[in-house]
Amino acid sequence: MLRCDGDRVVIVGGGIAGALLAKTLQNHADVVLIDPKEYFEIPWANVRAKVEPTVVERTVIPHADYLTDAKVVTAKAVGVDDSVVLTSIGRTVGYDFLVIATGRTCTRPQSRPERLEMFHRDKDRIAAASSVLIIGGGPIGVELAAEIIMDSPDKRVTLVHGGPRLLMVMSPRASAKALEWLRSKNVTVLLDQTIDVYLAGSGDGHEGQRDFTTSAGETVSADCHFVCTGRPVASGWLRGTFLGEYIGADGRLVVDEHLRVGRLKNVFAIGDITDVPEAKQGYLAQRHAMVVSRNLRLLLRSDGPEHKLHRYKASKAAITVTLGRRDAVSELPFMSLIGHIPGVVKPRDLYVSRTRRMMGIKSKNGES
Image 1 (cartoon, rainbow, N blue to C red):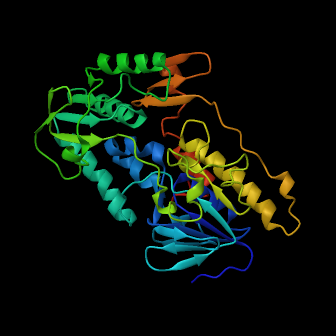
Image 2: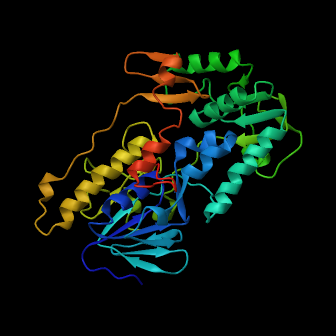
Image 3: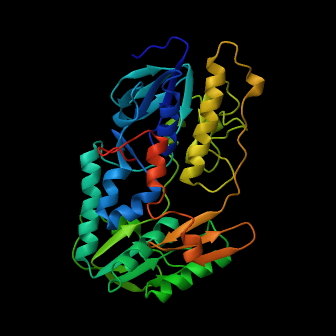
């Protein structure tokens, strides 16, 4: 068991929020990061990485590259009480402060080389296919359809979405603009239809043309397919613990204005697992991490005044969904925009360089 001596901060989940929190706290506390992977990845670049292999090496980053003074336990957290986290490898980790950053459920390989191979495999599947099916019309599905059709305009791309409009996290006007853009690029969009994702499979390993039947009885033929439907919040492991009472009906942890779980003095949550009423975006998860980092540094001081803890205010910031390399659709407070102008909101590298600088990571040539 890893014992603690008063300043142990255990972070469960090494995604974009948990990784940044561990990075910013490692010189101020005894930090332990529990994550089933040996790396974190920049999630908003994942779609681009499927069609542009050069992106991959800079977006999948070993924890060891930025955590120079923290411990990493490569395992899943499977249980927790008021002082200890139990892991899938039978190891227990004591804590003084706990941060839940498990985000959404997903299956990722443990090692970085295996993860990189997954991206290269997706690239090869897309390159070899004359037709691609995308299941799910949220931001990821729309961005993937746009990336594929802009990279290979001759491919037959079909997007099937179970809702009445695309991009339900945005306004109807933004949804209509995205739909118009996709159809102008000859992407077939089928709304109010579903495909059984369990019968379809994840997409990995399925090559050669297959026929898929939608809930409306339409047949879609595709050489490869990708499931881009929403994933459930990764809070199931908490339900039988003392934190279970703080899980809401939607599976998210109820947090206060300081991002503390149920106002517990030493348990915080950040990222998609929180019930903060805002769009679940990676850059907002990073903001959560910075607020909790400041609060924990206050609490770690023996004279740290609890009444001065920083508050997090739910964001109403614009949502931008990229449409290939140049275009995007943006939801602003008073209007929706599509085309080159909102496309410049996200730089060509999708903030990869900025994120790497934030994490203190430099390439071999000295660049971020």
